[in-house]
Structures are given as C-alpha cells and as structure tokens.
Image (cartoon, rainbow, N blue to C red):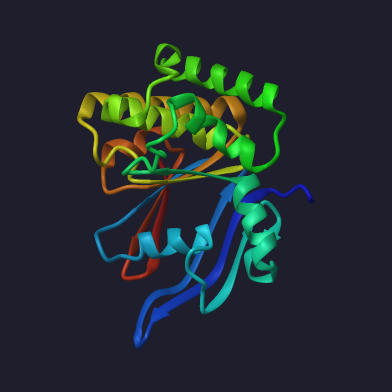
Length: 227
C-alpha cells in the first residue's frame, strides 16, 4: 500500500435517494493523524456521508480514497479487507457483542485480520489498561455502565491499529462527565497511535479534541475552520 499525505480524500461525491439528492459534490480531506469534527444540523448529510465512507452506501459519482485505496475501484472482498484493516468504528450505541466479555470484544478486530492469539490478548490487555478497565476484562456489556461500554468500544476501534477512526456521535448517549472522559480517551488514543479521526457530532463540546471543524449544510461542505 502506498504512503499518502491524506488518509481520507473525498472528491466531488454525490449521493441521491430517488429524486432527492442528499450529497452535492462533497470535497473533504483528512491528513494522517489529524482529528476533524464534521458538524451540521440534522438532515445536512453527515450520516449519509459517513455511510458512504464506511462502504455501507455506494456513491453516485465522485471518488472516496482511504489510505491510498479508492473505494470505487475495489471489489467487495478488497473493500471488506480495507474496512477490517484500515478503519476503526465508534458508534453512539456502542455495538458491542453481548455474548462476549470486554476483552473478547476488544480482541475481535485482531482476530478478523488474523493476528496471532498471544499478540492479540496482550494488546487487548494493554488497551483495557489504557482506558481504565483492566479490572472489568471478564465482564459482558450488560454488566458495564454506558461510559464503560463506550471505553471498551474505543479500545476495540484501535485494536488493529487502523489509519482512520470514523466516530458517529460517540458521546450522544452519555452524560457530560462520561462524555468528557470518552473524548479525552479518543484524543489520547489518536495521538498515541497516530490515527486520524473523523468525528461526526451535533455537540460543540465534542469538537474540542479536534484540530479542524468542517460544517455541512444541505449536503454541502460550507465551512472548514481550525478549532
């Protein structure tokens, strides 16, 4: 895989559902290791753009490049590999597997890319310690608080050392205290492992960990500012 200045490049991307055009020629670039907040009102196109970046939704025109690989040129197998190896995901609703313990949830991305078991366990233990949950390693999600579940989700997102984290309202279901802790951890993990972050949020407080704020309105990028 070739080295690239930008870990994420979105070029003139359009997306429509029937006659309704949701994205209108969106351009966006995120540098390696950079943290960028994507803001805007409901209906501005943030979630649709995120789904396109995840590969969940195909775009109608334009190009999306992640870690030097163009999503539109990849086969389904190559796209799945790219998602497993280069992207970490953090969601508002955690998306932890209920039958797995905290450490097993964290190990999962490593398992999916064929990481050696001993390395996988050691890295998961290190990450649990980093997010302050070493004492909760054997607990399943239903016995963890919301803040603890999101910290497990953060550890899982960086388990495989991705180049990019896509975070969709990661503090949306948390109180202000736990939300602040999760943001601090996301910033710390990004800095430690030099992982770029695209943080989709309605919350102005969440943008404090980002170096740049990009605003969307009516399916377009309307502003990009240093935070």
